[in-house]
Image (cartoon, rainbow, N blue to C red):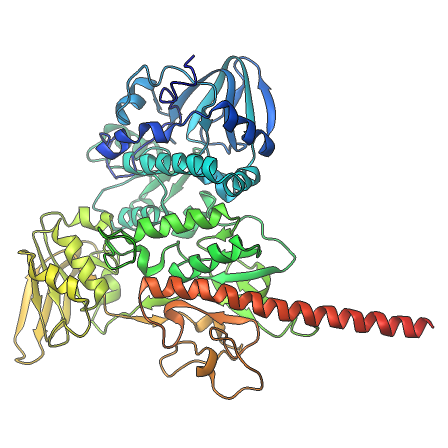
Length: 616
């Protein structure tokens, strides 16, 4: 056993690799240098503080602590004894400890035994939803440990700031390792060039789920698995999730439900606040609201991050002088919200908002009807649904969506267009960020811009960056007139026209990216009377116009409904502005709910007085 002076000798929750590929990837220098932070060993004083949040348990020799593919009970802090740990992927293939050590840049001595005080947990346990383990862990001899359930873990992170920071950093770094090395999540079996593989890979990557892709043309085991399941071409790819369940070409919603991203249970009593949309504005509302004691449910139709989550690099966000990827920023916010106890249900679409059924009484309730048939009740609703990418009028565009046409540029798409020619339509910041990101992978990036220049629509630093990139060509006054290809083979070419001269060009390419603005995602509010501007964005505060009461700045004309972020009329379409509105609306929610509570109390006292009078 290592002593407390040797906290570096831990490390058994095995990281893996989320990049598509046939096997584990080598460790990055960053991962290897953070090994000690990934697997902390707590001091005796820190262990004493943990005891308040969990229960002491003893395990017999051979007893299971974690079983791969099965939900774990929470976080373990080992007090005495040894635990044998083996990582196991959804296909049942075990990786020996020596391989684990190699993957994360450790030595066999580092991985030889569990050290008393070691923390064993996964960040997925923060959500409170079932989180499948990626390891088998069994007691070797007698083992004593503190078991901290998910709700206890969240309470510990908040109450014990320094200790909580250490534990949370370890859990985040382990998940990063899983993602970078492709271990611990679903295995996709199908061609790396398949549009369906790209669709599911993009969803998993944006959701922060580790995964691997096995191409049957390159991997013998994958080929044998395909022969075993004998799927029709329409059933590809095959997806095997951590508990061993096999799906044939699942939808994103099917996969989300199987991975526990969709909340299985929602409370029957009203939430203080239901937030619809998990972009920067929605996540900021959730973090600030939950940290101040409000009961929060956050519903998101796809995955967290919104359009910001698809940004390859944000360089003008305060506090990140070297820039930060949108996915990284939004993943941190998602984890932060879970830490404060926000309830999430991803891949959960809200179909309609009912403002009438329970509108009477001193404390009326709003009802959200979900696409899966369930209902959610809330005292207030914050609309943070942002905007959906606009589809330009291009013939046969729908035919190539997901088959060469993309509305975002993630690492999945970047890998597919490595050393190829690509085109990109758009002249805003999102287009500029995507062009710069793709230029580091593609042979050439052509930016097609309808306007006469970029100066009115793009930040100056991005214009300079594009001008300095030798393989980015900007074509202004240009519109796309046709997409070439077939349904089977996907996109094969793009034709565009100069709007001033009428001259047309046609170029062979298999990847075309669209960043042509966005329309507000507010149609689900129809029937509630929420005021909209002439473009469909939600009016708030003074912009609502004449009404019989004073409105808070982010309140719509319908009592209890607020709007923040890109969906709000007049909002500044920037990540920082959206986060600021998310923070500001929480103060206004407190004001609104306090008024409601005062009204309810007054009504209660009046009813009590009437009851007393009747009794007399």
